[in-house]
Length: 114
Image (cartoon, rainbow, N blue to C red; front, side, top):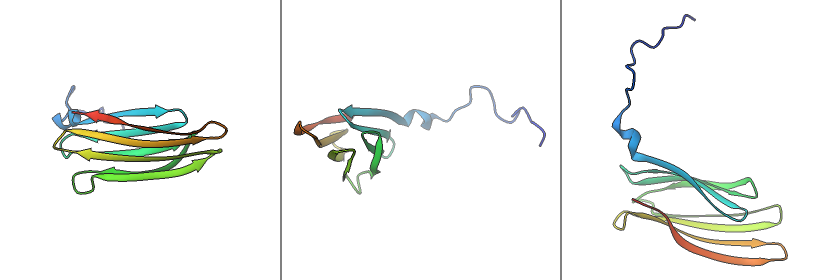
């Protein structure tokens, strides 16, 4: 296959929708949430990891505003509920994490605002 040099694509050409998506991650102890927010919908896709092992993921949007993911790995247990509220322009979380010998702790807050 011959290389073309991509002459049909102009330098510095990008669609403005590029700025509608924001990706980040959030961690508490052994729990990590990777998420991408598409501000034009609004919609959030996410993956939940516990002790480095993926325990689930999903998508939330105005039609399906909340999702709960839970699981256990390497002696830890966790449950995370993520909700999108377009009126308040924010994504919230409620998390409970349980660790051996330490017990369980709950967390609640705003994951992302726009």
